[in-house]
Length: 329
Image (cartoon, rainbow, N blue to C red; front, side, top):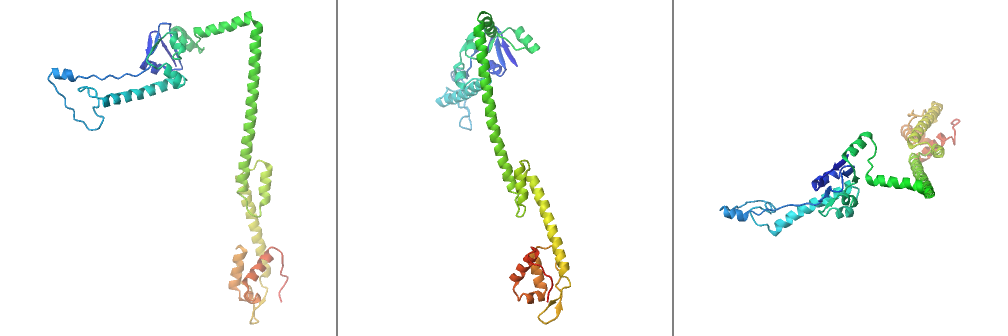
């Protein structure tokens, strides 16, 4: 979006134009600026008297009709108008600073209400250069950047330098290459450091998330996942779940085998009568199975002389393979 004028671009018109990508003027007599805000209060009270009229304004709200045109302007009314003007001025200057990529200090220097003529407006940063309307249109139509008379002068200076002082031109080119190479090298090094740091943080997070999946008895899965450098917490959790299922299935199978081996083995009760151990679900945890057998089988309680803790220890040792029952007497 390009703004262009061959006469005047001031006040609110300049506010609009400042939002364009570039602003061009046609020549050295174009007026630019008048950046400021004005409000006017007209006191008609004397005129009302001449017409024999007297206005009585009945209001609600402290500032309603604080600056009535049918009464002289009071100090409070003046301050209210001034506050409004100051606020709009702040917004105006802030927009110009943003639109023209200027600091507010720079914008304020050009926003004191003055009119800048021609190149004065270029010097304070309100416009970008001098160009004809046809040149602006042709450049935009062809997609070629608009070159102002000032930029043409710079190009000619470079051309003259190359032709008249080739050694200075080459020195400038070499210096530019050196500075560019140094800048690129610095950027590459900074990117490398940033990449290493980011990678370390990512790996630290990965290990932390994997460690959070740890389950007793599956430490090897955790260690392997950390070592391979690519496993994530989700895949580790799935492996642990699968391993835990397999382990539980194996324990259930072992328990079923042991239960089948015990089935039909006679246990002598206190009365001398042989009784079989009551069947219990082999898929239950060892503590629950031991308690169920203890409660359901008097012969077990007799055999262990009422010591449940001793029986539980016996069951755990049996399931871990530390002991094996070959027979009973």
